[in-house]
Image (cartoon, rainbow, N blue to C red; front, side, top):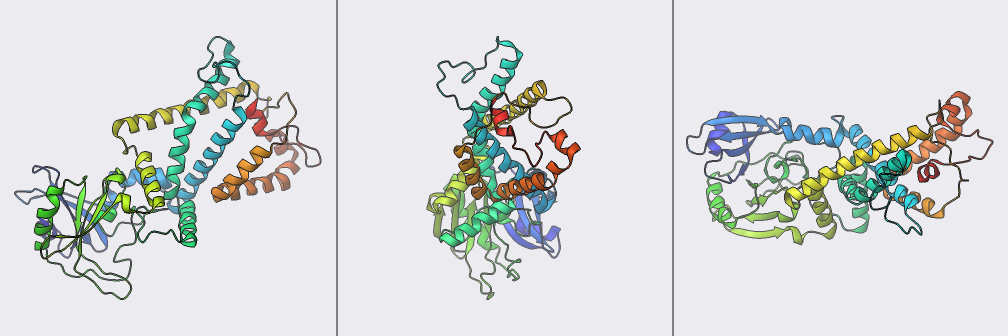
Length: 407
């Protein structure tokens, strides 16, 4: 099967073989064609080539790039990270400002009051929906940060400084490069969550004995590892270019806690070593579990339904916010409506924002930039200042967006 895939693309080299889940499934062989990984679908009996597609052109790769970087590379990743960071801060500060103090009724807290007029209805729709969806929304937003370019690098640097860095991180952050390897590092619906390939380390892959695959399949097949399971040949190890003969067999299941890595002996097909998810550092286990939850793969369709309901709740939350602003807006002013009570300084909100500025550095930098631009530019241009509802530089602001949101 592998030889048929290689023969279909002269000059290609073998990168990975995926174990079929059923005898009638097409065999998936990943080959390297001039530095680009190509997935080849082979009929298991006739060896006919049924289909082929470059790993970077697969539909799920496109969806992943839209979701994570808006097809704009690292610039798009920064935009997505900014949106996620501000969403986290808006949810947390909204809960802080809204949290009921001394309330004796559940109406407007657990369930919306539907018969108290449109003003109370929309306020309750916003606040009650926010209460119900905030927890899982925060989990979804936080679990997506390790993929972002800036925050992902931030995490890597912190782990290096604290001595908790993994030898091989199980996910990538920032824009995904065109995949060079298949195997466990590039396989799966979100291909690209691995480390640099052997080619990127500066070495060429050696010739391999393909008969080793038959021996390894005979050993790995009966183990019942969570699919997909991929088998890869040895590659260049380290900058000195030295190689060893160890093959790899690994489960790259989307439910990451089920993943298993095996080091295989090509001569006998025996397992030399086994590494499971529970053997990884606690940070890698937390991030891996969060990724599975983020993708709706941790506990099946209920996980996906919960994600769908959370997304719908966030849309309803946003719609309610717009309706509330529209009903209370000052004509001709985009800014937050004025509140009826004087603004009060809150050490709690200040501490929360500072903490988020440290934990989410891109948010902190953007917040400082916005404050500087507002004070030095926007407040000094009367038409812009009035349209945004800002106070002149010389006067004290009578309100804040947070206090307006609390009202």
